[in-house]
Image 1 (cartoon, rainbow, N blue to C red):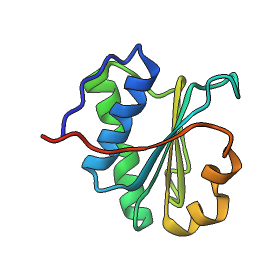
Image 2: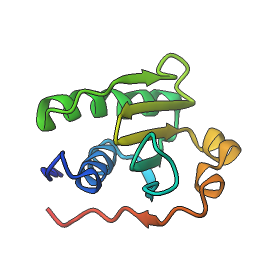
Image 3: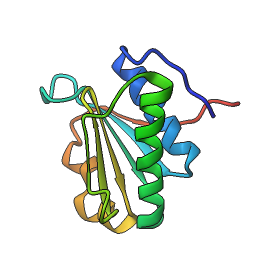
Image 4: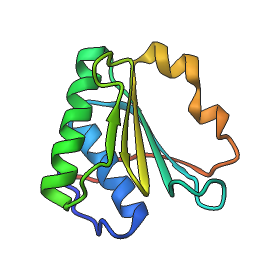
Length: 125
């Protein structure tokens, strides 16, 4: 699936990141609209990989495709070595890639329950 939205539109960028994660078989992908709640980002994209190996693959593809396909270079990536929780900071969109255990432990979806949540639904190819 190729999603080529406008990267200057933060919702489109969040959807593009979600589509990239989906392409790498990420599960339970959600977008949290953080506008009006925090100053450091507009959207959180949260997804799950089955194993640390898969989360690393998802995060690596996110870095590569955001930069090469959309011209958005993530400012930093944290947690890549361990792979339980990888954060890809693309400024206006922050992507969290969790293993199931880490996602259940940190529960970002519940921590930010006041943020409007959108379940990612891939568009047909």
